[in-house]
Length: 440
Image 1: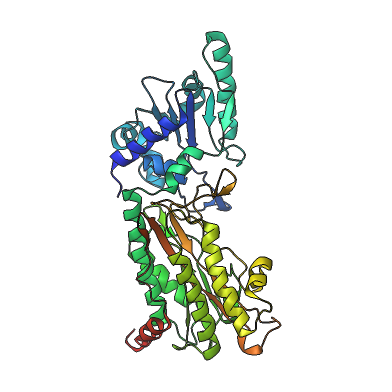
Image 2 (image 1 turned 45 degrees about the horizontal axis):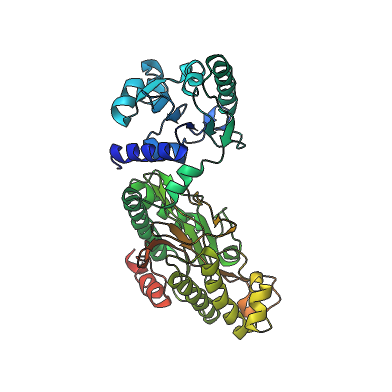
């Protein structure tokens, strides 16, 4: 678990970024109704958790330099023994100050009354405007009240919204040591789950049975949840990028593509592996799999400080493009393939995205209108794929083959670190591990 001093240091850093006349307002994630009176499982807003470690709903964090005594204020649900019997214990106002280290805490019911005072002397409010958060109405009312107070007192009042929360998102983009510790732990659990999938999967099982084995490991290892809905696609389902029904009965000769990762202490892992449920690749599967792996290895090698996600994608795409040309799946020269992106008939997505508290994590992809250079501390995925639809106009032996290989890569000063390298991905490693299935 992250030490409270780490959260306090993050709040101080954000206060420096918002400036003397700025305030950051961060509401908790809303509680969403699943159906009738049943709620979806609550998961705290990543920004709020990043700054507090607080995971209760109905709360709002206010950070401001304009208030000399209270620079960090948290509005929370008050203690309520009768309600806590139903929903579990609450930290309450005293607990928030004691356990979280904020300067002050008040009941959430007092927010409308108190927030305008914390916005006096503030000119810019850092808040995710335009996302339709239920808190919008309350915030706008507080801003109007602060403006009225400012006109009477002569103090500054909010005139500008800064959105999105650029400062905290830039902080989150480059991971600190506490974050990397959590991400390595999540990667280790995800590695165990993927290895288990390779051992138990076999013809005659349903996709969801393999998913259940992975979910068991996630939960047994203390993970709060999966990082995203798991994709467990066999045979032709492996060619569907966001396939999620996971209900097909797997057959002899199928490839099984699994895109699954856990979330541990609010940090995500995001991994894809593709392997033959029969234990050995067919020759066409072997050829396309090795091509995809070569592409991924080239992209990982290109990942280092100063590179961009575009240059990494180009490294992956060039290998796949050249391979598809050699196999006759596309036509032309390699220069034509790259210029016209002819490989996109079979590799239609990008190679990378940021990874952290969110599986598609925050942080700008461009700086001054150009792809931003990578820096040490950034974490991204490397995930090329090759997908040949069942009705593709190619030799029949290639049809219905879907392959994606994905790892989580930390950019370091010296190059990179593969956080998920413990999961087999060479043909030899996969077939060797799957040979152990009789002992499962």
